[in-house]
Length: 417
Image (cartoon, rainbow, N blue to C red):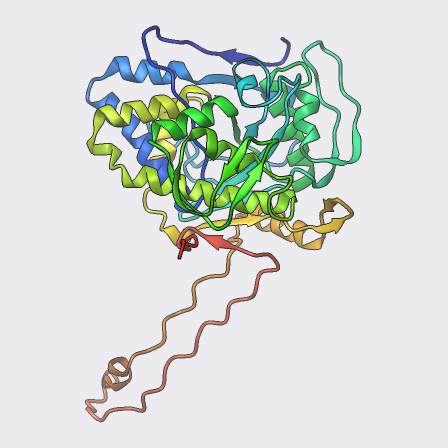
């Protein structure tokens, strides 16, 4: 396999579990899990650390990305040890959910050759680590896909106005996740002008094992949902989804809602938010056996690049995000115009990518609080006056409206009545 360096080591005797995606206080949930991994190391649990690191398949695809890439902002320093490896500069991570349906994953659908990615997120971490901006890219977005190197040494043909998720399928036509990720990264960088620092790929099996390792995910199902294709059959109401049902809920599209990928993205965000809340509710840092089980599940089915693929690097990055408030995590779907059954980028799409490229927030700032009556009555410094002034609230800060809908980690998902 040319151009790709892959490492994977499996420690015998370690139970196999699953993996996890994200939303809402997303980065904070990731921090809890990864800082927990550091706790194992500092406590001298070398076996646990080695086992967790061995779970992750690390694939360096940098040789497949070419030289004509967006500019990478240099880091302020080169830290060593379990510290943020990219301190002082913004970081962009591409997260992909693979629907590969061969091997172990064939149990969750037809045994189909090749692989696709129906969930793709650009996770942008600001240089000062004060916020995280997460953009969902619709699988049906019409984009230009560059030529991509394939495992046999050949190169795929460039495509115009192709569905976005076909980039993953093109690179992964022989079943190699690294080449699938590389072709998707090349497509995203060409489309956005944003340098992608690293990537993570999660598959069906890992997702199911991770949810089951959490003991299921509590969800509000607003209406009966059925999709034979996704093996989904849920009744309305508040319930706890096991791994199989959570995957079906995330995958279902046809005959659910309006049947579009756009509505499915909304459901996936609700599910991922519920998963993060479940992680936080477990108090995993104080329960080391449960923490190990979860981390084993959370790393078991990861394929990642050399930065995210190292436990110490993940821990350092998570540690630098501990102070990000829930309102500092913003979620948005890349803006689009309908183009028949597909969607196409528009001027707002370009504006969103530009904001991320220059490390600007994608959500309006929070308005300044109005002055209270007590504030208004306070004497002016140096006058000695004690006379109350008129109780006039300070004017609200007027924030420019964004041309896209933003959900933040402070927003609560709807609950069942």
